[in-house]
Amino acid sequence: CKYIENRMQSDFIDGLVEMSRALGETPDRKSLEQRFCLPVFCVSAIEHQKLSGVRTADGPSIVWKNADATQIPALRSHVQRATLLARSYIVRQQVESLIQFGTSMLAFCQIDRAMQPKDHVALANIFEQLHTPLRQKLQQLL
Image 1 (cartoon, rainbow, N blue to C red):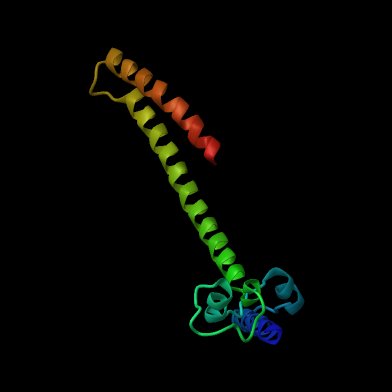
Image 2 (tube, rainbow, N blue to C red):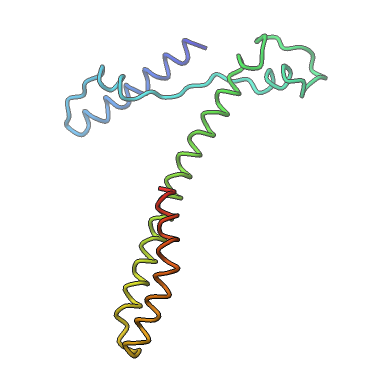
């Protein structure tokens, strides 16, 4: 498994070097190796199921002695981290958009010329009372 991990990482860096050269750059392989690490998992779902007691009819595990060695738990953890990072980015964008929408609505309430001045001032005050605490709570999420 270590051989495969090393080979996959090497091939990945080779690809980055090749892309850099195609762009006319002079790649620094050592720098690329330090900056980029391709996660590689040599997994066995069947062995993991056997060791976890899920698959009992197929006999005992032949290759690994414990479920962690199958790298299924490590792969699961990696996928969860990657998913959480992506979700975090999306939620952050949505929160920032919501804050901006509230700020735009407040500006609209303050300058709407279709209403009487006293009415748009009253509307702006009401909206600001609602918007300010919500904006502060949303900004705490960022």
